[in-house]
Image 1: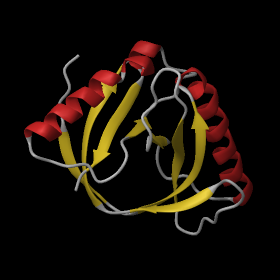
Image 2 (image 1 turned 30 degrees about the vertical axis):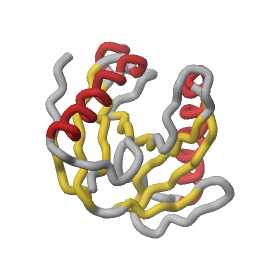
Image 3 (image 1 turned 120 degrees about the vertical axis):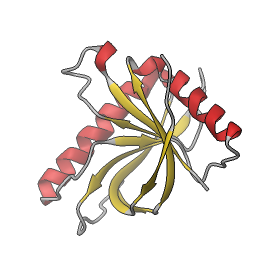
Length: 154
């Protein structure tokens, strides 16, 4: 699959977020639990989710290594944190992104395309990469999953 990299200006936005430690072997379970907890919390409090879920990866997850993932949902203003659910404000700024179509375990090629583009265009990262999940893996065949892979730029 070939990847076209584009740049867009991101507006600031509020997100409900859970930071969790996990491994590659456990990532599916971890993300599912965190997404479920965030949706339940937003529903309980009447917070409006205003965009698709995403995960930021401040640590690189390698085979056998544990790292932190930040599981997030964009929400309308007015949300508040509770317990391990944090409220964060994402900064405005440029974002390099590309679209991956297919199974999650094949998303590495999208990261490689972004890294090659940034290197070739003299761009530096300004934060952890993120994956935005644009369809439901429970209702979508693996070959049709859409994941936006993006990196904030300096």
